[in-house]
Length: 385
Image 1: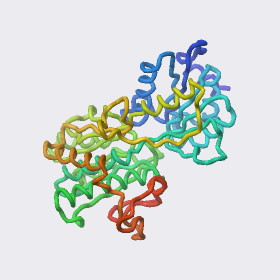
Image 2: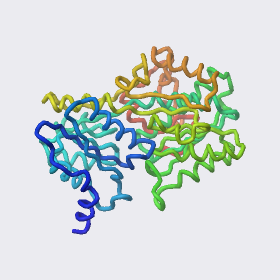
Image 3: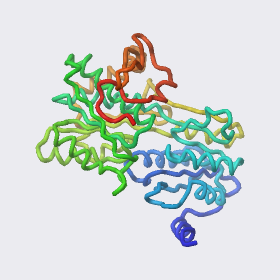
Image 4: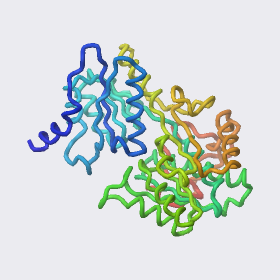
């Protein structure tokens, strides 16, 4: 009873029945709406949908995770949203997979989008549940490229969240981008490139549960790594890099997820790969409103004609103040090569970390192989499970 009372009190400002002509959608976010990362990117997309599609209104609940809301389940939150007239609900974390699936079965009249999952590929999954994800592999290839072009000693650290297929493929994409810049552009010995992944255990810091990302970033810099790439939802790596830079260290960092992340510490930022959820959200919400919804698994990439176009590109990369002019020029050429296919980083020969074959010479990875990447790649240091 106390739990329900606290919940109702907290969300009183967001309550309110939908008007007859409104299409109300709900957004469940794993982190805070102002995290300068993953959840804020979703929140900003929801606000943009309200501006772009007349008659839409968003109700959001953030910090949907066991640490911030112990005992509160996704189906419980969904029940509350449905009581407010919500017609479509977005769950923005892989951790919500089971809860979203259960809620979709309990509310067949409501449409659901689960971010980063793949339930929609299962013919037996509910017809009202679809999946949406962005091909951030390309963004992280660009991050790795920028990192290697900027590193003086070839020691690049990767601040990772928890270990799953998604996080492994994104870390591997960073490594491939870094290796390409190091060997093909800078013409340096591949053995001189060090790429280390340290996992903290969740998407962001939970004191007493995860490793402290601030301390992990400090450990990277204190042990000689001069660039740290972040794969977590928040900006600790960039903040630490800025502190070190102000102390005289020649270090930089690359945040993740949110296009405004560099604003946290612009002088230390090489750039940011970011998600733009507006095209994907717009697709599903328009279909739901027009009664043309169908179960789909959608994995959207950059608009190579203009990857920072907010209307058309689901993945973008903004260069930062700390990226040199020469590196920016090389990055532009690299992005063009990715876009026209003349550069294919996921074409073999590539081995897994245990030296088994991932891709034979001339073999290009399929979407399924990339999506379900079982381990890190040869040349990467860090745990694969």
